[in-house]
Image 1 (cartoon, rainbow, N blue to C red):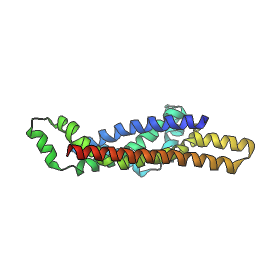
Image 2: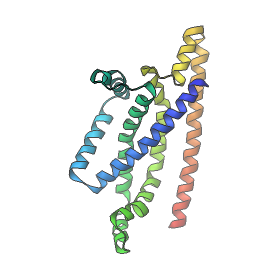
Image 3: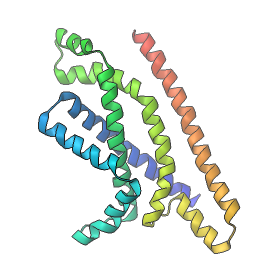
Image 4: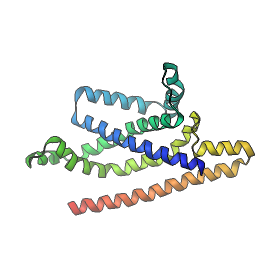
Length: 207
């Protein structure tokens, strides 16, 4: 339970920040702002092209060499948020591009500005498309938080390892922590299906 209380805040905070990053980066790419778009592509290239564990080690163990020291929790939140933001931005970008261009033109026709059209017309439709993939990313992040044990963060898996090292009851403990991860993923899967149904019914009502 002590480990679970560390895993849940890490997941929720990191994923919330990742969503903000993902939407912002996707909108910049969709708007096709030249220099900003290239910077976003560079960010995505770095974080999608390197292992999450390497990113954790660079931030927690590497940055102190240049005078930047982070505690395990903020280091884990930063890395998970940036990593998931890179993947999530591609999901949101694809969802934005799936909305017919006529929707943007229709917004202009009724007197909306570009930002108003994006916020009120394009983005809601895109997020409805992106929800299943983003939900899958959240489920993956729940399991990936176990990697934070490598930077001494006492999340659920690291707590289990510590207990197992003290009493040598290895199999029941690791089966137990695996079961907890499974239950968390199952609950999130149920929530994902419920949210998809709600969004689909909302879309049909608007249609």
